[in-house]
Each structure stands twice: as C-alpha cells, then as structure tokens.
Amino acid sequence: MNTSIFSPIEIGNITLTNRIVMAPMTRSRSVGEDIITPLAVEYYGQRASAGLIITEGSPISKIGRGYSFTPGIYAKEQIKGWKAVTEEVHRKGGKIFIQLWHVGRRSHHSIAGEQPIGPSGIKEADKVWGPLGNGEYGMIETDVPREMTIEDIKNTQKDFVQAAKNAIEAGFDGVELHGAHGYLLDSFLRSYSNTRIDEYGGSTENRMRMVLETVKAVAKAIGSDKTAIRLSPFVAEGAAEHDQELIPLSLKLVEKLNDLGLAYLHFSENISNFKEVTDEYRKKVRSIYQYPIMVAGKLTQIKAQELLDTDLVDLVAFGQPFITNPDLVERFKNNWELTPVDYANHATFYGGGKEGYTDYKKYQ
Ligand SMILES: Cc1cc2nc3c(=O)[nH]c(=O)nc-3n(C[C@H](O)[C@H](O)[C@H](O)COP(=O)(O)O)c2cc1C
Image 1 (tube, protein in one colour):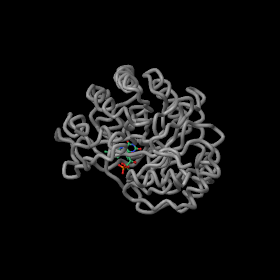
Image 2 (image 1 turned 60 degrees about the horizontal axis):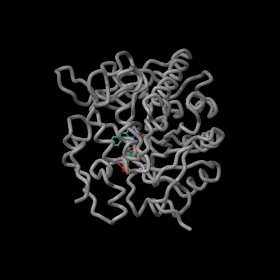
Image 3 (image 1 turned 180 degrees about the horizontal axis):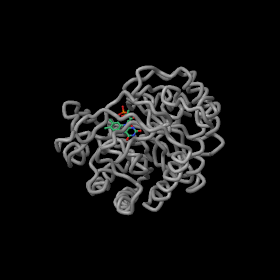
Image 4 (image 1 turned 135 degrees about the vertical axis):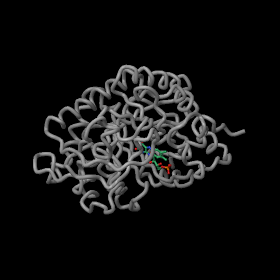
C-alpha cells in the first residue's frame, strides 16, 4: 500500500504525526546577542501541525555566523530563548529539531567577529547579508577565509557538540547538522573549496572526515536517534561549477552515515544553482541507506505524494509554502487553497518584525 504524506512515521525514538516537514528557513530576526526573537514562539507555534519543524540555521559559535541577526545556540540567553519556542511547539503537539549551522567561509569579519575560517584559504564568490558600515544592512562581499588548523577543526567539532547539548537543554527533539549549501561541513566535501593536503583533504576518504567525525561526536553526545544531517550534493550553491566528484562522494558518505543510525538523512535538492536529482541516485541512496530519508526543494503536495509513492523517500519538507501557510498540513488535507508565496514582498523573508512572519492567517 502507498504511504500517504499524512501517515505517521518514527524517526529515532519519536513518532511524527505526519510526514510533512517544515524545512529550515533563516528569518534573520534575532534580538540582542543573537537571541531568537520572542515572536518566534508564535511563529513556530503557528506551524506546529507539521510532522516536524526544522528551525532556521542556528550558529554554533560566534565565528560560525555568516549573516546578521541569526539566532545562535552557543550562549545561555540563546538557550533560554529557544526553550520558549520548544515549549510552545510541544504544547501544541508538534516536534522540533534545530539546525546547527557553521557558515565557514561564507561570511565577513564584520559578522563573524574575526576573519572567517574554512578548509582552505579560498574565497567563496558570494555575498552575505550584513552591515554596510553606514548603519544600514545589505549584501556584502565575503572575506577570503583563513585556512583552519587542526586545532580549529577540533575546536569546531567541540562547538558542534556543545551546541547539540545546548539544544537538548533547550528542549529540542533533536538536531540537524547543516551539511549543505557550501557552508562549513559541505565545503570540506567539495574539491573547489577544500585543497588541503593533510588528512582532511585530497582523497574522498579525507574530504568526508570532517563531516563524519562531527556527526559521530554529536551522536555520541546526545544520541544518534536525536541526530540528523542535511546534504545537498546536487546543489552548486555559491559556486558556478558543479563538482563532478561530489555525487559519487556523497554516496560513499551515505554508506558511512548508514552505520550511525541517525534520526534521518535530509537532501536539499533544489535551491538556486542545482542539477536535477535522478531516479538512479534516489534508488542508490535507498539501497544503501536504511533509515528515514527526507527531501526538500520546490515540492508541491502532488509532487511530494508522488515521491512517497516511489518508496524512495519517507519525509517531504516544504520551505516557502510554510512561510505563507502556517496551517499547510490542514490545507493539504482539506484541499484548501494555498496563500501563494509573496515574491513581491520577498524582503520580509529576512529581517523585520511580524509582517510576513506571524501575520499569515490560518485558512478561513
Ligand atoms: C527564506 C529562506 C531561508 C532559508 N534558510 C535556510 C537555512 O537556514 N538552512 C537551510 O538548510 N536551508 C535554508 N533555506 C532553504 C530551504 O530549507 C528549502 O530547502 C528551500 O526553500 C527549497 O524548498 P521550498 O521550495 O519548499 O521553499 C532557506 C530558504 C528560504 C526561502
């Protein structure tokens, strides 16, 4: 029998009431010392009927920040802020993972607080959202990163572990490591951003080392059932060219991740510069990976159900539709019209207050 997007599923030791996931989305509204805004309690609470919410990327350290106003998970007040969010989502019967984020080289010293770091001293051809120097905010060029020393690598892994522990203290059901979109973990996998000649660069085995060591360390600290990772081998975010080696490398990585028994494995398939994911790839992943598989990227209800029907994925994540439809699950269930994504008002995606954030209504 085919699996419905509305059917429950177990991930780790929890049961999700449906397979419709809210994808991680940065909303750039933190207050004070990168503390989640109190408005986020309402925002995430409004969306608690999702089978699972994955929060916006949450920096694990000061140097892990790459955009202004992103709420962190490395300081006491930040943990307190998130606690109110998890309590509200749980009160409404939902489940919530936090996305642990280190942007690596996709930053600027005015945001990271110092020169950003990466696997190698190679600049990302990219701009990030930060201070323009005139009191205003806008897009600024990334810096050339400092090549990480082995000590930096070990310290960063410790930061991930501490952030994961903080997340559990804040009441999250689990954590998703951001291993996608050219940010730190992903940049170790890719040959154009990683030209190291030590044990963290060069061979496939070496380029996977940072990701695997970090996931293992986090899983050991909080439990593999509460640990997940997001990857994007078909996305060439920030780089003009696709890394030809990345897809075969990702399959080896999936094989290694399978040994860890994570809560789920999440593929971000379709943002900006991407290649279409093939059925052949999905089949390979399914044959080597025995735990829940999640996909995201420009899904519609129909496309999501079709994907579940192939039996090659288990969970379907929606990003922008959840911005404009807090009750997305109910709308899907009842065939109610969706509020379209307001591209003209795209500015409210990032920054500001409740406009474009908590003021989208349930279906009436
Ligand atoms: C406003 C916005 C912020 C995003 N922030 C993140 C993020 O913090 N972490 C991440 O992994 N992906 C992020 N994404 C990508 C989404 O998780 C998702 O993969 C993407 O939007 C495609 O899904 P959709 O077509 O359903 O929106 C963001 C997308 C949007 C629109």
